[in-house]
Image 1: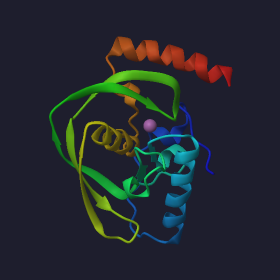
Image 2: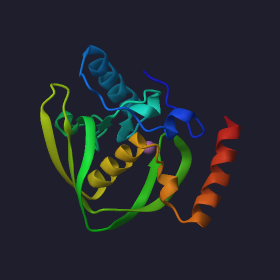
Image 3: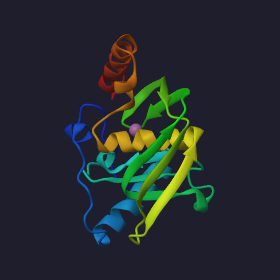
Length: 166
Ligand code: NI
């Protein structure tokens, strides 16, 4: 199991590196991320959240219930966005905060699986939201950055209280 980095840690604000070679270490990291995501439990995780500044994400809306619903994507890119969807969002790195965030309703995500095969995923609703959220992590962006300035200020205040309690 990997430690989940929390708001304030530098790695969450860096632009993650492209993965040039899907070697054994990358595969091992992906597996450990999936375990960490299920254990949290969460429906998505990005490598910077476990301290690795690499473009690698894991997504599973079923949290391990249905293995066919697990996505592991290397160098994911949101290729197309369509529509709008407003829903509540949270993040394992931003504990205790959930806020309404606007995201595209439908996206086309491109990336590579662990065998190096190109993958194209069309996602809608919550799945589209999670892909957008995780790809944001790879660019050092957190969901609270997408709130209005006032809501963001309030969320940060609450977050500081949460984090000082630990
Ligand atoms: Ni997150």
